[in-house]
Amino acid sequence: MQAYLTFNGNAAEALAFYAQALGGKILFSMTFGESPMGAETPADYKGKIMHATLEARGHQLMASDAPPGYPFKGYHGFSLSVQAKDVKEGEKLFNALGAGGKVTMPYAATFWSTGFGMLEDKFGVPWMVNCEQEPAKA
Image 1 (cartoon, helix red, strand yellow):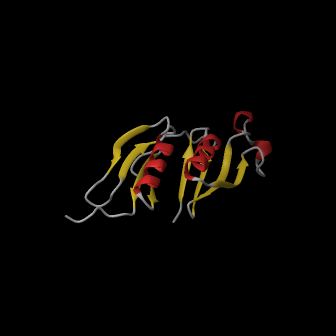
Image 2 (tube, helix red, strand yellow; image 1 turned 90 degrees about the vertical axis):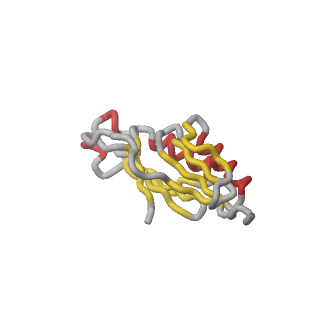
Image 3 (cartoon, helix red, strand yellow; image 1 turned 135 degrees about the vertical axis):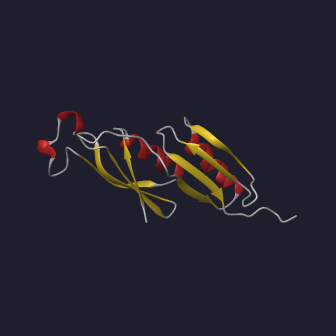
């Protein structure tokens, strides 16, 4: 399965942010104006993203801007989760994704992991960063 996010007119900015934060690259991007229906697209939507694909950390994330006539209603009931190989990498990812956003659970050791945290990035997308290392047994 792959996540597909819809943005409120800032998909290009969000994908560039994720590419940098996650060390990925945008594989494909098409605006509404570049699409076969470009001539019928309202002028203020021509530069908005109709579909884009980002590859990072061996996975793909697809995204678009909300199309004309479909208002953006925010994000509810899910989180994107990214796994880090160790605590240091997890903290780096957490800080990169959280830049300009809101921490909802600080990155710290838990009973299942040496590092875990939750945040909403500056676009309002919820994330969980989890370190694959288990804490030392007492």
